[in-house]
Length: 274
Image 1 (tube, rainbow, N blue to C red):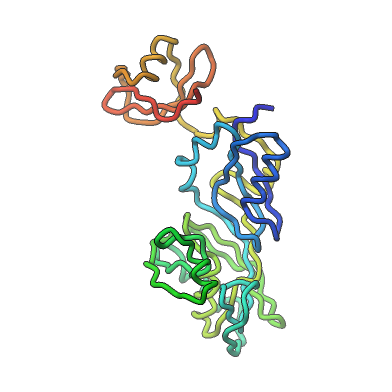
Image 2: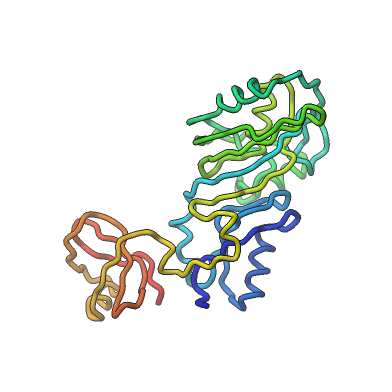
């Protein structure tokens, strides 16, 4: 198996994304490994791991939308927004019908602004927010645009006050914040009890252990050039190539050499393997 590409992993609960990458590194004997979309230790599910030269492609893969299955525990709020934090507030839970919960879920469809949680890996002056939070500090965070493409109720346990739902959302959406906001809109409080990521872009949970070779990572047009043209591109020489502006996969003698871009009918290098 080529060691340049993406391995679709199913990260278990209790393991960090970094630890999952270390595991892949050991198993494949590859030094360069990275991941797409961090998953907290509390969460499980799809974690695409970039292996070898595929780590160069991360800039093209960060905008993927995602799908999650989450549970909300109603009636309690925690300092972290999930089950790992201490309970800091308790409220009564109403006698909600599934239709009422569905209406609240649907109210989050489309574009909105969301304030990132303090317990997140976002950085302020080089320090991660969760590090500041652990020091008992709270800083102002700017709201960021998010998009909820679909959200559906899967079940509601009226005895345990647990909502289970599935959501398709944009990059940068914090499900723990969404869980708190859903609970608040129902007139109570809540926290994210569990989280499973079932999809990142086109990579799904059922693709676990699937390896996507580096040349198949990006779905862009292929162009074939000769060695002389490739060397010109590698050396920054302006190569005329009449086509619309786009990214392209560059091949020489049927061998994938990297990603280029055509702009104003000029072919330039973007990310090359060598």
